[in-house]
Image (cartoon, rainbow over all chains, first blue to last red; front, side, top):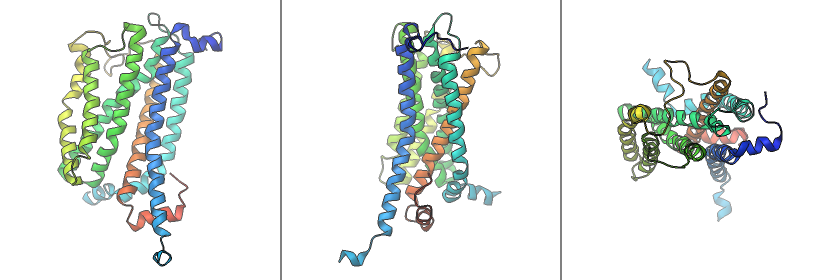
Length: 61
Length: 250
């Protein structure tokens, strides 16, 4: 059974909404950051490898 | 047996095998956490004494579990790297530290937010809270030590020793609520007894704990894989891997 009568009740949570939503929001953000860090690191590694592949010493001269 | 052990410890073998598992782990983690979020936030009944603020338990308890489980994994990897000098163990220890620190941070932060409406304060130097803060600093210590020396081997050894010494803190965290009964309530879930919680509240918590474990496994494997790519970026298998897949898969 859904515990709240309306959407505003659900957000307000009888006065505890600010604590509950803040806790959930910050926690999920941290978890997303945990995944984002290796994701972007991997992209940089791929970029670096790609650059080396297309590096043409003759063109540089 | 030893051949198998060395195969398992080869970063390349790990990279290729874990790639098949990773999408499933991520998928299951998202399913369990989404289910737990909806169930815990909207459908679990509110607590008779604490009202709706108790819903924070659905992140607080799973993240605390993983803060501790993550430390076991990090310290075990550290021990393996000291004893057998296995490259993969170094990578596991290195990758586990920031993820464990993140979960310890989540546990402390949600605890602080939960404390405000329940105890009337964000922070108190209670035994459980203080020992969790020490855990966070141990994670930071391992992270810093891994970059402390210019010789990677030396840095890893120092970090592994700190991780091992820091395990002293783990039983203190577990027992702190029984030894010094101040403010933090004793454990709600014990392996030896039935949970002191109504099933309607307990089931979404179990779903969330499973979801957090799956998320942890997926995040750790993902981070290990990227670290392997970084360390072996000059080898032909990594170069071929990027070239043939055209950077499409994770």
